[in-house]
Length: 141
Image (cartoon, rainbow, N blue to C red; front, side, top):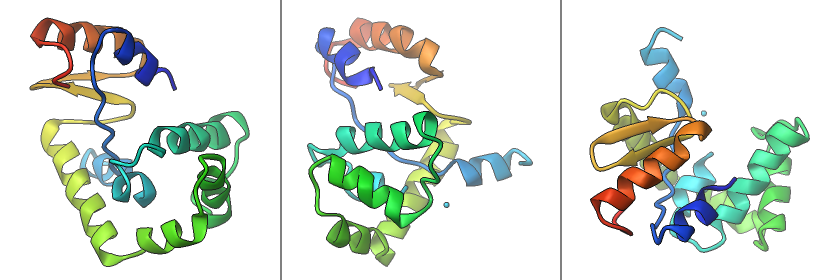
């Protein structure tokens, strides 16, 4: 919820990348395509915050289209077209590819922050990840 403001305060950009925790958990012995399909859209951070709020603050089932539609609407978007696009095979393939990349990088939970080849996991590591990025050269995150 706070990554954008914390990164902006240091002049660091944020690249949002959705991934599936399910395959990662299964690979360790243990299905959010909207965020993947529309990762470069300026409204995506507002949508992600709305999903987090729905899930963690209101305990809503974010796997249901109705909840995701409300989150999209709260981010100023028209849900029907975006939900349909997220169901496309191209969107599904993109999310699978990002999940594979997340496993390749060694991600095991969320939130995870990757700076270069360094992995930082957890909300309490955000400042450390930003400091690491700042030391590497601001804005190249």
